[in-house]
Amino acid sequence: MKSKKIKLILATVLMLAATAFIKPNKPALHTIGDSTVRNSNKETWGWGTPIASLFDTTKIHVENNAMAGRSTRTFLSEGRWDKVLEILKPGDFVTMQFGHNDGSEPDTTKTGRRGVLKGTGEETKVLTWPDGKVETVHTYGWYLRKFVRETKAKGATPIVVSMIPRNEFRNGKVIRADQDFGKWAAEVAQQENAYFVDLNKITGDKYDAMGPEKVKAFFPGDHTHTNLEGAKVNAQSVVEGIKKLKGCKLENYLL
Image (tube, rainbow, N blue to C red; front, side, top):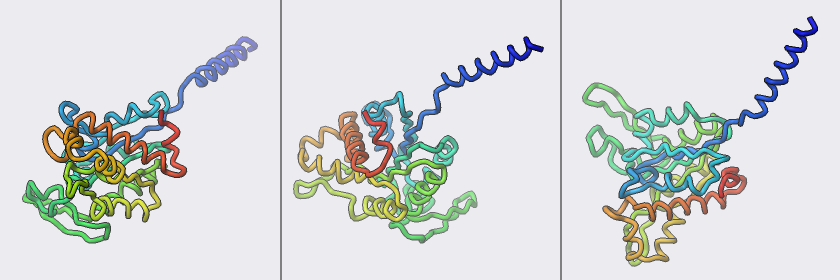
């Protein structure tokens, strides 16, 4: 009887000792978006890849869940958001940057399959696909609100990010998204009491200071997709924006 008690005590001690060495799950930073966040990492890069080097990855896991060619609408309809939700846990963070693929008129054509309704309202458009499937298309703001609300429901922190500026200048200044997608992203963040990083403005200000010739070197093929150096500029801009967010715990994991 005495030996059984000793064995039980030893087993308990060993179990407690083993538990003490089990590291708790690290929080994760999930980035969602389009090719300007995650690309092929060959000639063109998204900022969601180099941003990992700006965090202490011994304390936080950085996972780039963005996918090239997606809009808010298709990121949801293809089930990509559901996959993020499945692994999202309390204490995690989600940055969401869309806009580059959301601008076409929403329909069932190759051009319009990614398009959303403009603005942040509750307007809808019902589409019937050739196979008979019915899809209700919403506004850009509606999709962002869904991402924000469902992130919060998981106990995670949403951070809305405005889209990176394109290599498009007018009168020596880069064209901003502050009258459409950037503006709508800011509105959703304000309405939902979510954090907002104005990446479009932060990088846009840098582009203005550099001038068209220097900025051109970041764009090897078109006016939207950057090379690695351009992606690093945007990643640094995101970090600068995070540092300005009052009370956002993500800053604690930066190097």
